[in-house]
Length: 79
Image (cartoon, rainbow, N blue to C red; front, side, top):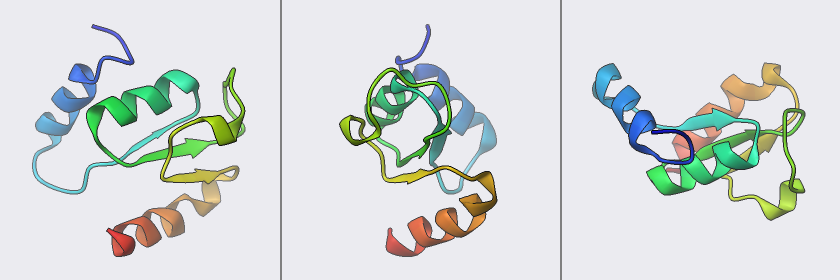
């Protein structure tokens, strides 16, 4: 199984146990994997993409990993 099949992502979540589930990635395939897995996807816009950012399915887009802790917190509060 390979992305965008969500099974490996679900297996990783199961191995981690209970808790918040979200997915961070930088590609079209990552965006599709998050959508298929039914989890919020956070798109790093400076990574590997073939599609325009606005054409992808994501909960949050960011271009600086220093922003990630704040963005995760905001996403959790909004959920």
